[in-house]
Image (tube, rainbow, N blue to C red; front, side, top):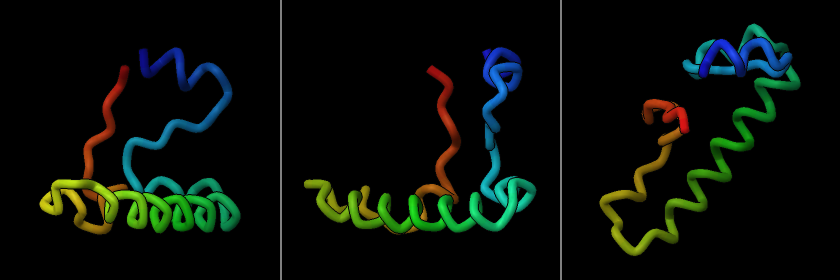
Length: 63
């Protein structure tokens, strides 16, 4: 499944540290998306799930 995604021509990041290899624009977009996620999780009814930085700590899930 991962091989198919990689062969599709779009970058697949499995570690946040890999974003730097894509350039400054990609790193800025990744940081912005992380801040958006931080705002989104603040609205969760279960506050134990509202910790910031989840984009950096959560293991990716392949569906």
